Amino acid sequence: MTSHHHGRFAPSPTGRLHLGNLRTALIAWLHARSHGGRFSLRVDDLDPDRARPEHERRQIADLAAIGIDFDGDPTRQSTRLDRYREALVQLASDDRTYPCFCSRAEVLAAASAPHDSDGVEAPYPGTCARLSSVESARRVAAGDPHCVRVRARGQRIGFDDLLLGHVEAVVDDFIVRRRDGVPAYNLASPIDESDLEIDEVLRGADLASTTPRQLWIARELRLRVPTFAHVPLVVGHDGERLAKRNGARNLDELGAAGMSAEGVRQLLVASLGDAVTADGFDLSQLPRAPWRVPSIA
Ligand code: GLU
Image 1 (cartoon, rainbow, N blue to C red):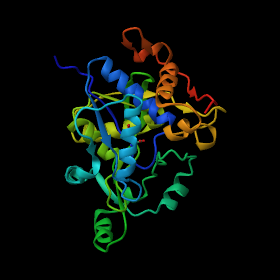
Image 2 (cartoon, protein in one colour; image 1 turned 45 degrees about the vertical axis):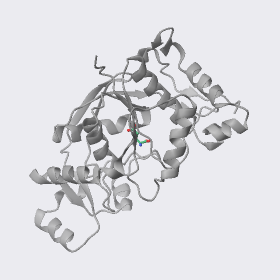
Image 3 (tube, rainbow, N blue to C red; image 1 turned 180 degrees about the vertical axis):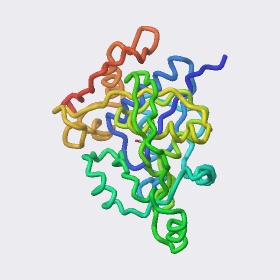
Image 4 (cartoon, helix red, strand yellow; image 1 turned 135 degrees about the vertical axis):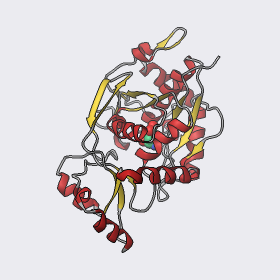
């Protein structure tokens, strides 16, 4: 019997996993496993400045310590650069992308929108979309540093999230290839989901705003599209954004405060409330309010 619940966890190997990351991983794992689904690890290691193999090893060990296992070998995005480049070539045909020469400061100034530090890009005002193809080709040939953006033409894309309900957004001209040549997360992620035959993407609510962008990629490249569930955020014990000072502890720090890995697992399971049932896991019963980490640790 094939289960249509192939799930995944996709951490960036840039540091230790904290309570919030571990909780998201646990929910994704419980959801897949309770339906007899496979569970895969994708390693988002595209950023050469920040990704480290030792972080990946620690993350896998920490996940194992709280009972989360994976099928097969991890898929490292750094091994799939040819696939992303091929997709970039495909998108560049038919004028679906364009080079953008704006600096980050220029984009921020033009957007003048409040944007937070969670890595979600500010919407791009489209300055370079209006350059003539002759002018952009001239600047590319001259070696002007540039990233590559999609020409989204202000389309709205929506999806039905298993937890948030209907989510819809105007897709902006987001980045698919960074200035340093590295393929962007919003390009790589939907390609991986499709190639690895992922059925369910379960991740933090802070990433819900990136999903319409990823669905734009999926549509343009005719990719297979998973279902999405964005889980409520974890906040610090003071109710503020989770940070080091208010509870973003990793397993070693929790251990030093007297909590074993088994204790952490029990704490996380208890935080899932009625979603943990006598015979498994029911995502629809997940508490919808942000989970506030207790100040014990
Ligand atoms: N690696 C990214 C992160 O950790 C993306 C996660 C995802 O798509 O699930 O925030």
